[in-house]
Length: 267
Ligand SMILES: Nc1ncnc2c1ncn2[C@@H]1O[C@H](COP(=O)(O)OP(=O)(O)OP(=O)(O)O)[C@@H](O)[C@H]1O
Ligand SMILES: [Mg+2]
Image (cartoon, rainbow, N blue to C red):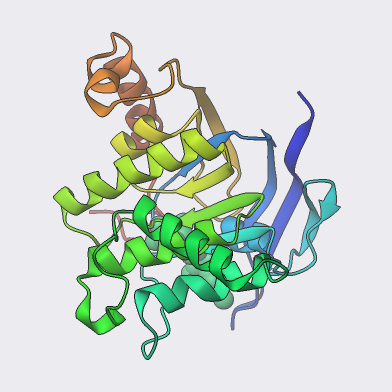
């Protein structure tokens, strides 16, 4: 299968008072269209930096990123990003926050059709009863549902998710993981999910890409997941290879020193 997303020898350095710090170096990744990759690694290794470069929010120091045949040179509507906390417009309702995206992507459609699209995407993420609520009237889980709905409404070629459930309680997190699972399996949108959560990666992804600890972080190992789709949480958990897969990821992470470990004085 040809690559739909390609990161080739990607390098990122940030300036610092003691000289440039090379956070990511020689990061290579290819994703096929419709693939779901979970990117996992210790805190501070450079996951958000990689995601930000694909999003076009961070310039590359070196290397290339190509999405759908075009070199990434800045942000664009072909790539939708969801962060830990959604930045919703506080004076607009859930409906209006999503409608902005629908209106932009489908501006040539009649207003009634755009309204139906907005309704459908909100229903999709379980917000059927909350169209007219302002962000401050919504729980953090519901706000994140709006954030996901807004990203989906853009009908992006690629979804970039940076720990989208990291701030939610575990029940809400599970609910939204199920929503995401359902949506990605229906739409087959190419998705990169940054996560700390091994079980989340195993539930959602086709492949788990494990990053080494920086500086000069790169892809350290890749694990192809054998769980069939469509997936159901209980079936994934009961899959005979689940624990072996889990051990492999945890084993990789344990073998990596967390960032800063070297800087600490020996005990
Ligand atoms: N704008 C910046 N200027 C300088 N250094 C930065 C900048 N952004 C990130 N860094 C550094 O780059 C490294 C990687 O940061 P990044 O946020 O990508 O890590 P991460 O893997 O997403 O961590 P976490 O899991 O905690 O979110 C860190 O050491 C961080 O301090
Ligand atoms: Mg991060």
